[in-house]
Length: 144
Image (spheres, one colour):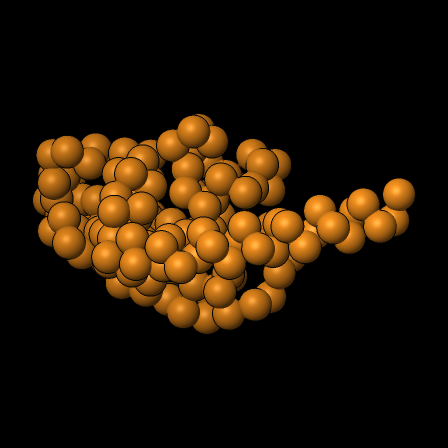
């Protein structure tokens, strides 16, 4: 097994990992969020992260059956991680605007709400959420 320093940055096992929990505003830092809560996204998926990275021109691929170690929920929605190439074979950056893993995470969190799948879901999703909240409030009043 070669040392990490001798392997090429273009090897797929040298790509950075981004789990959805890193960008999730429902998570605390202890639960795995790695960006500020005001920049984080509500329940991002690995597929959404991959779509954003590919759209900007980064070399990224999805590993569907991988799970974040701090994620207690085993649902399919929370599975997956994205591997993203930051550096080329010679060690230079693939894209100058992404010098670090944090810059990629912040960009993904900024762009995920603008995805077509997100903008379409929010129209109908908000109404169902409001109805759900209303029934929860009703239940709370009955308990008192």
